[in-house]
Every structure is written in structure tokens, then in C-alpha cells.
Image (cartoon, rainbow, N blue to C red; front, side):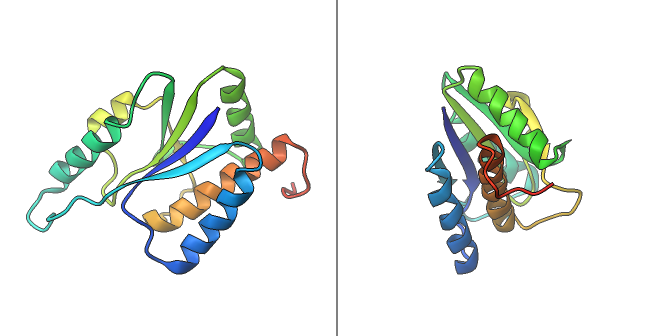
Length: 157
């Protein structure tokens, strides 16, 4: 199975790029993992938030194909402990799924069409994080889940 983190816009902050790079390198020891960046929508100054979400949504939906399952990181999603999230990944791997896609949307969230196509919503926390910071947190949690599944001494209860 492949795991993809699909994000809107590039990561600007060097410290976030460095952190993500470290976890991507570690993750590839366990699984085929990649981050796919959908470029920011240009010229949004005079565009409504709904139209911006719709445009981003079209780009997210265009990445769908048979064998992929999409899960949105969303503030209204289900909250997991790290062990529960590891169990979620384990079930997905055992299901024969070709690709598991986690999505971090743009600054205003997701369009209704993206919510309709997604299999679930997952919350990182009740806190609000910048979309760039969320990328690092998601990457670390996916890595943590694999260390839990392999009984490696990274996660401590």
C-alpha cells in the first residue's frame, strides 16, 4: 500500500521543510510515502471563499482514481489517540487498499464535493494549526503509527 499526503500550496518555512524531510525519510523505511502538492489557487483577492474552496476541491477530486481512498484532516473529524490511529492504518493495510490518501485542504477548508467523496474526516486536535504546521504534524503521526505497529521504541504511553 502507498500512503500519500495531499496538500494545497507549497511549504514555505525552512524548519517545517526540514522536519517533514526527516519524517519522510524515516517513513520510507516502512512504506511508500509521498507528499503531493497542489499549487495554490492564483488571484484569490476578489474570489469568495466558497469559490476558492470549489476550485481547490476540483483539483483534489482530480487526483482520485480507482484503488485510492481519501481521508480529510479536518477540525470536525474524529479524534484518535496515536495507538488508535496506528490501528486505523493497520486495518487499511490489511484491506488490500492500493493507496491511502490523507488530505490537508486550503485555508478555508474543503468544498462540499470533497466532503462527499472522502471516506472520513480526521481531527489532529481541538487546537487550530496553520496548514503548513499541520503537514509536519500529520507526517510525524503517520511515522509514529508505523513505529507503534512495528513495536519500536519511539512512542511511549
